[in-house]
Image 1 (cartoon, one colour):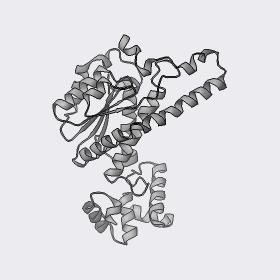
Image 2 (image 1 turned 30 degrees about the horizontal axis):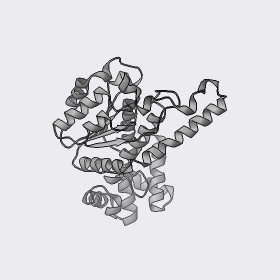
Image 3 (image 1 turned 120 degrees about the horizontal axis):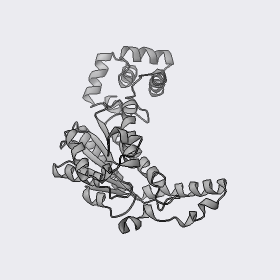
Image 4 (image 1 turned 90 degrees about the vertical axis):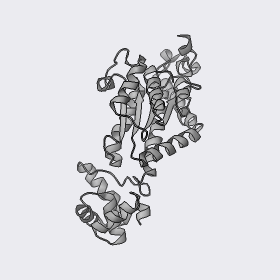
Length: 296
């Protein structure tokens, strides 16, 4: 398609025209140099990312959900970010959702034609019972994926805020969304392989959206993930370490507070710092809408 060929994500990179003749070290060096352009591309769209984060915070505070929708690599990155939120921030798995064209099987294999259906993008959101408290983030490196356009159009129809993340300028998904984040890291080392710089760009933006939004709804105290769920040995140890860092107590004291608070890191921190019991700490936390610093 002519339209596709004109896109930055599809152009040949002049720095890698001889990729097949480079030594391994030369190829690795040029890849590393190209990857440095990712952070620069994101820096240019910080204002749009800020608007997106503020929108996500607003919707989460209403009790809504953060919903990612995409196809192929973009869809997988959305699913990945969503799946990391429960262990990191203690969110229910329904709070941050990743949709990928073709369903779960598409995470590990290509589902032919799924990304070409606008109707499928709409249907997947209907199945989730999308509502006005939610926010939908459409991901497409090219910025033209029909599945994503269909999802964004449907969300807009029912007055749900929408955000688009693409790696080209003036994209169709950008036009379909309330907020367009179009970070352009340039042509790929391997022509058209958007799992490379474009994938890294989208992953870094998703890191920003979910992390800073969770800070905004009280999931972080200082720079500590105080809603971490101690569901295995590593996370139990991490919870203890977080309490120790937040309160400057010894491990045994942290363990005791966590045991008394039923493993709730926030509650344990407030109990120790304010020298109060569990019930009083829980009340403080409720009054502060889950923000530890406000509770203190």
